[in-house]
Image (cartoon, rainbow, N blue to C red; front, side, top):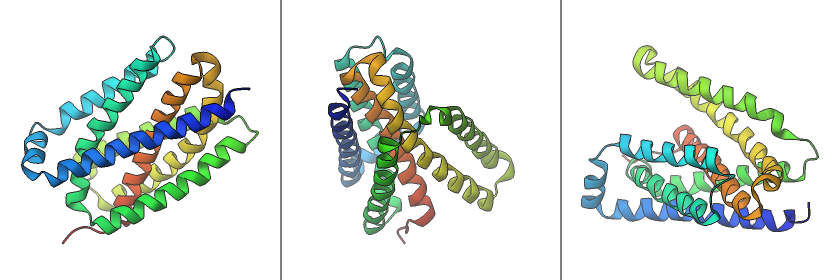
Length: 215
């Protein structure tokens, strides 16, 4: 695959851009307390809806979408996620956020390298990881309304961590096959989007497990 050496640098560059936008917008909003209160007073539902709509559009329209549109949607998603990320700076200590971010980056790098160099086709992992993720989401909802168990919530967080660890290797491996279908430019952005979701979700779960909260 002749363009593979160009695809991955572009993809990881877009991943870095997305993470930078999210953390910068989240921290910037955190520094402006009045603005943060006004924005978050709208509620999380509109934010979640926007994220789901963007993810849905990119998922089903990626083959027909203009590369510029793909980039715009990715940037908008990163900014919107940054709004919710402003809360982690309120809840957790900055030193803890930085250390967990570095740990996440190390784990991510190891799995990404494996997904890149492995000769195995990891696409078979896709359905397994997806079903596991759906099960975790379902049981998380049930736990909020029915079980209300902190130990069960901890178990689901650990399982979620393992799922997104698997998704990192899977998504890095998958993008090389995606390029043939959508082209290098869109594959780089869409691959970055998938890895962005993996990184953010892994970071959040590690923060929930090991993060130190503000007193």
